[in-house]
Amino acid sequence: TQLLEQSPQFLSIQEGENLTVYCNSSSVFSSLQWYRQEPGEGPVLLVTVVTGGEVKKLKRLTFQFGDARKDSSLHITAAQTGDTGLYLCAGRDDKIIFGKGTRLHILP
Amino acid sequence: SAVISQKPSRDICQRGTSLTIQCQVDSQVTMMFWYRQQPGQSLTLIATANQGSEATYESGFVIDKFPISRPNLTFSTLTVSNMSPEDSSIYLCSVEDPGGVYGYTFGSGTRLTVV
Image 1 (cartoon, helix red, strand yellow):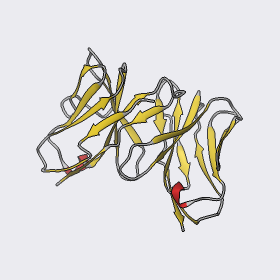
Image 2 (image 1 turned 90 degrees about the vertical axis):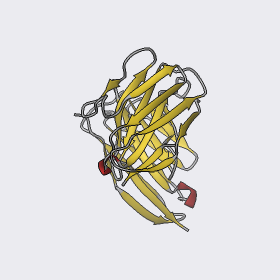
Image 3 (image 1 turned 180 degrees about the horizontal axis):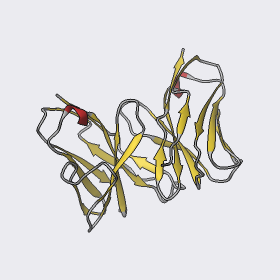
């Protein structure tokens, strides 16, 4: 069974700080996606990474796909209160599976 | 990307009753997906709904408990039958967005509480 482990589960930091969250698996995925989910809403796609070693930037968010396509990280620079939410990674092979998420709370 | 309208957004139901959740997509899609998101858990796929055929259920989910309809390419319903408190969860429908580079678009979810 493919599993995606996300860490940390919870993270509460001050506005302006940097942070990194991780998504790890023992399985290889053809692509990996990151979603953000806010209360009362469904997850919204942030990025898809496909190539091992790929790095994508979305404003203050930097996403990296591991060389072996088994893991990924999301780095946020100078966090803002608007970054608060649940961050989910999802690995895609013949099916898509989701991690349990990292619940991020940015304090003003 | 597709836009999904899901309703109801939340409901509180008595045990033993059933609730039907509706999802309307603004474009035609081949497959629609139904997920459950329990507190502190990841999204778990319940079933895949194809138009014109029976839904395909994942291990641990059965048609009698979660009947699905897919009458056309833009609409689907999920019914949670004979509810118990263990069914309290967020239920989400989703479609794969062909224009979004393998991404999935989700409805806003239905927060179900069974009392």
